Each structure stands twice: as C-alpha cells, then as structure tokens.
Length: 395
Image (tube, rainbow, N blue to C red; front, side, top):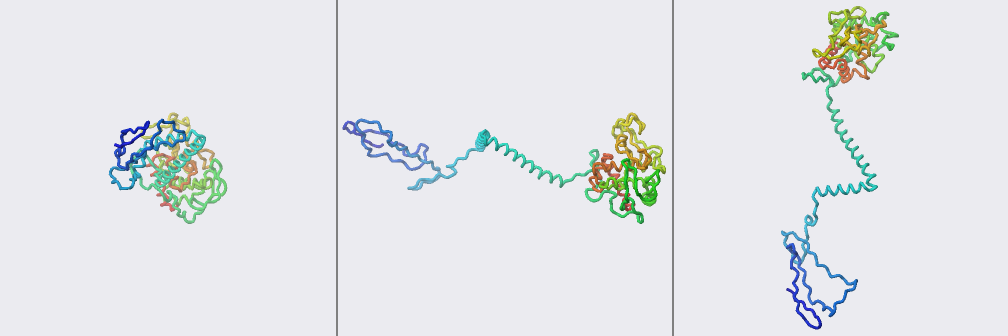
C-alpha cells in the first residue's frame, strides 16, 4: 500500500489509499504504472479550478499481448497483426455491403448509376452465355433426318459432302444442253409452260418430248421408264432457269417417283405416252389408321373422290391441299393434273425448292425430303435411290 500525506489546517494526517492493481484487469502482462509520490500539498480551502486547467492525465492503457509470447525486458510487447485486426464474419460483411448499397441507391448519384450498372452486368452475362453456348451448338450439329419413332441406325446419312445425284460427273457423251450439262436459254411462264429455245423438236402437246434421245439412253442405264425420265429431266431444266439457286437434280425427283409409285406403276397403273397414269393412282384414306396421318377432306372429293378424308394423288402422291397450292402445268395442256407425271414432277421440284433451299447442301436436301414426307426411313430410301441413279447414269 502507498502512504501519502496531506496538510489540513496545519496538521499532518496519515491517509491510507489503496493502490491501483499492478496488472491490467484482463490478467495480461505489461508495464505497471507507478503511484504518484510527494504530491503537492493542497490549499487549506479548496477552490474551483479555472476552465483552462489541464485535465487530470488519463490512466494509461495497456495493450493486450498474446499469452504465449515471452516478455522482453525494457521493451513493450507488439501485438501481432492478426490479433490487432479483427475481420468481421462474412455474413456481417454481406449485410453491411447491402445496407451501404441501399443507402447509396437512394442518393441522386445512385439512382442514376445503379440501373446503368445493372444493365451492364446483364449485357455482359448475355454475351458470355452466347459465347459459350453458340460455339458449342455449332461444333455439335445434329442429323437433319430424325425420326423419334425409331431407334434403328440410319446408314448413308450425309453430314458433309455432296447431296445425292450432285456427283459432278459429265452427262451422256454427245448430248448437250440436257440435265447435268450447261443449259440452253429457257424461260417459263408462271404456269410452268416453257417458252423459247429448248433442246430438240418440241411438240405442242408435250414439251418434255424434246428430251427423248437423252431420256432413252439414261432409261436404258437406270431402268426408269422413258416417259418418266423425260418428265424428271424436263423439270430439272425448267427449275434451273426459274430457280437457279436450288440446283435440284433429276435424280432426286426420280427417287421420289420410285418410292412413291414405282414411276407411275402402283395399283397396276401405267404411264401413257402423254405422261398420264391410267388408271388414276390414289392412296389409302388418311384416316389415322395403320400408321397413316389423319387429314379430313380439303377438296370436297373433287381430286381424290373422297368427301370425308384426303387421299394422296398421282405418281408423286400429292395431298389435295398441297396440290392446290403448288400444282403445275408442265405439258402445256392448260390443266394442272396431279396424275400427269410431267405436271407432278415439276410441282414436286417446286415444292422441294421452297424457302430458298440449295439441294446441293446436305442439310437443305434432307430438310426438303422430310418436308415431303416426315419419316426418316422414307428419306433414307429416297437418298439411296437417288444415289443409285446418279451412279448408274453417270450424271
């Protein structure tokens, strides 16, 4: 204990006052402040101190020191940085950041800047997603011919290279201006009737007869009836002048004609010299039975003679509503007849070339065939037959 003395009214009295603890309250080690000794005697009558009097010095603070550290004589212990800096927990940081952002957004600068920042982040996220997703989709093309009803593997589906029939091989030697070779000047009216110079003599009844010599040679090589061969070749010539970008080959039209009606011979029919199938080739009613589509009557039975359901018509098997849209008059007889192989072949070519398709591009080729009949096995059969005709004819 310390002993201090005061002089009061000329007398000395001993006053006992407890000393401050020698160590900080938390038990930490450190320097201990010394008690004051020989204090100045207080005046007999205490007076109020002036406002400018210096304040009593505050009790010195003692910094905590790690318990495991050893004290160093004559030197104050430094507190490690990790102990001196206390980092708030993540949740507290997040709450603080949210409050600060909310407060800033209420200010004029925040109301102007925050929407712009949000828009910038949204645009950046969209650009990043596009940069990641679009290349991935391009690198992994899916087959065009897909049929969800079957899991059987499809052979010969082209992913790259030429479409069937577009082999680039020369046409029949000695024949010029025919399918597969440089074309003569040829125009066509909106109805499909060709005018102007064509190859060979042209009869008023059937312009496709101009291809008789060429069709006879190709027919012998492929087995396609000559009348049908003329119709397929003539349709290619007309489309090459009216829809140049399509580049449709007669081999594709011939393949469809084979798969649909065996070139106009289905149901015991035959193609007459003028190209008309007799008797008429009609498909089964599209009533939804036996795996067929269900299509109610669209022509009041005028073309298919069925007022309840539609039936496919002619050598190229058009549905009445489709024929009414795309039908053609290729033989210049003034009638768009779906049972005439000339009219049907040109109409089928126009249908395949719809939408700016390029039939030398595999994807466009498969898309066109599937639009004709959306069955993968059907498209595969057409591909195989067109490829066969292209190899046999050398076109």
